[in-house]
Image (cartoon, rainbow, N blue to C red; front, side):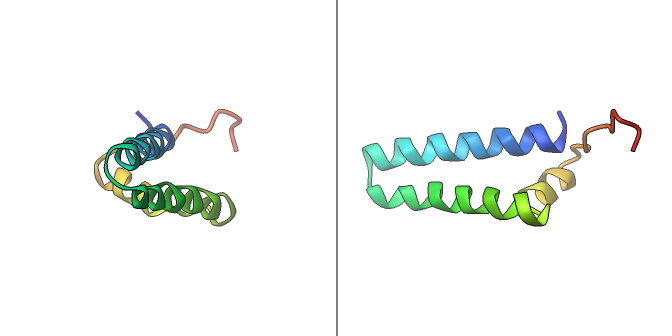
Length: 69
């Protein structure tokens, strides 16, 4: 699995988890969804995300460049 795929997996799990927790426990868990969304938004502009650093430290590799750049 690549870092990019791992990041999408992590974000999806966190959003779904926060929705389940908000439904069963407290609506304050929706702030986790807000945090994930804002983090994804800023990473689109800065090309940096803390979760990517964590995934790289866990041994995931970046996607291979297909276009040869």
